[in-house]
Amino acid sequence: MLYEVREAQRAVLTPVSGWAGAMSRLYSSPYSPFSYMPLATRAAAGFELLHRIGKEYEKPPFLLHSTVVDGIEVPVVEQVAMELPFCKLLRFERRLPARLAGHAADPKVLIFAPLSGHHATLLRDTVRAMLPDHDVYITDWIDARMVPLSQGDFHLHDYVAYCIRFIRHLGPDVHLMSVCQPTVPVLAAAAIMATLKDPAQARTMTMMGGPIDPRQSPTAVNEFATGKPFDWFERTVVHRVPGRYPGAGRRVYPGFLQHAGFVAMNPDRHAQSHWDFYLNLVRGDLEDAESHRTFYDEYNAVLDLPADYYLETIQTVFQEFRLPMGTWELPFEGKTMLVRPQDIHNVPLLTVEGELDDISGVGQTAAAHDLCTGLPPSMHHHLLARGAGHYGIFSGRRWREIIYPHVRDFIADAARPRKRKAA
Image (cartoon, rainbow, N blue to C red; front, top):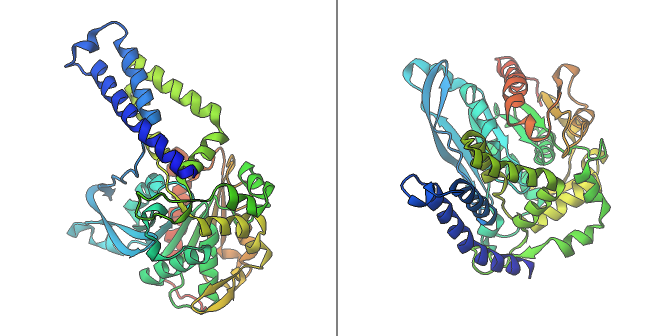
């Protein structure tokens, strides 16, 4: 019922938001006589703020049309390399000229974007930094409300199975990068492939700001997950998709509830940001105003999660800690398998944490090293990014200037030709 109420609210707000946007342009366009009236700038700013608060935010595009390789600008084409019911595997193909043909052998990197509310475009800056030196792929998760019921359900073990399918599709020398939530299923996928002695095992694993062991430095997110009984989540946050969407009837954790949770974590900060946006428009500080638009166009664009996947993540990862406890079993290819990270012997591991991360606390990602006991000491690497929060480890100045060079060198070192040990 709550989803239907939200849809009714959206039906009311959409025309109001459209009207506010038109009024903002009326008071700001140099071709409009209203823009020369007293207080026109304040009126335009106020109407734009109202427009942005009430509008519906769609998934933004990646807008990565080119990159620079060895000082030469080359076009980038976004392609679908593989498509499954709940996810598309995207490739950002660099159209290299003949003089850069050697870069066709650059390391192949598969970035696992979170399936935790926001779209994969949240990692736009991550992909942008990787493109000059790598052949980049990323998981682009599909909004569950857009997936028909005929496609079946999606569970946490399905996420692990998707990871394995993507890794096998890209071959044995792919380098894995997981950001936040997917560190858990990606480590599980790597462990299962190692247990099976799969010839397509990855070349390296880079895990950034994820809840491998949420018992370490618990954050407000972790405490929320453990502070409620499991059945509370199913009763309170799971709803069915209304009839106007292709996924009508599917049980989901709605994006609008997730967004409300994101905002509730720092309400004062968001209120101040909107007020600053208004003041920047009034002052004519267009650069800061555009930065606000860019951030919130991404931040406010959310997707619905499949209910089974969400509930199993709460239970398996945040309440029962099955991965660090060594008790996680899941179905794969017709049998039940225990997730055994200790079976990984030849896939170097880099973990990255932000000193100020308030989503995955310090130590939660580094816990992967304690689980991957089959790796020799030379294959264990860790970076603690001083002054970086959660988003700072994969986006922004600290990512580009401090963290990415470390990740690039880690991948480059492992990508150098050498004999790999038998699995």
